[in-house]
Image (cartoon, rainbow, N blue to C red; front, top):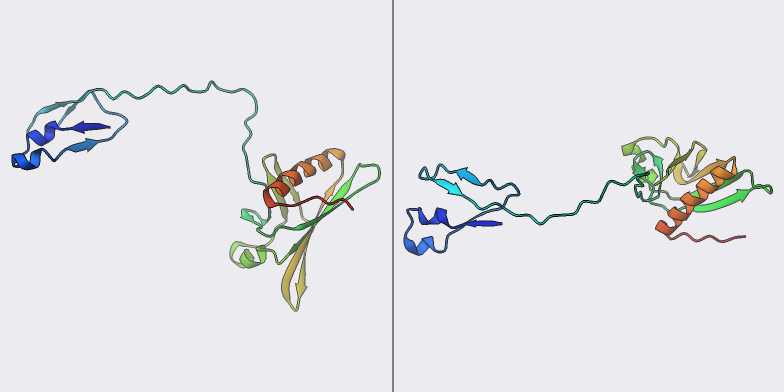
Length: 179
């Protein structure tokens, strides 16, 4: 930050006010000489010296963006209710299913304003896992819960789902209990 005291000296103010008055200029780009229309005088400023910052050399390889793992029923609207999740897996390990049960999900509060439920989306830093197998539970004509199923048809899909669940459970305080 540069302080300009010379402008206060050429001011028509009394000397008692001149000493207490100064103008501050904060700018990243301060020019070596600036012409001022004030009394037609040139104003010379010292060059601003910024500390040199070492830039990291460009990295090679993929760039991983950290995304908070979340579940959505309406794209762009995160579900705030933490579900009860049940997993099943075939004996040979080639396929499996995850059943998510949400009691009083927050999507019911905003679905009229935001839009309709379009599917079940599990979003994390690797991408999106999605399913359209979503059903709502109604009691006395009012929505009370949602059940969503996600089917995994290969060990690779199972592993990907488990990576998502590990991130989601760490972010939301879920615990795995084997039965």
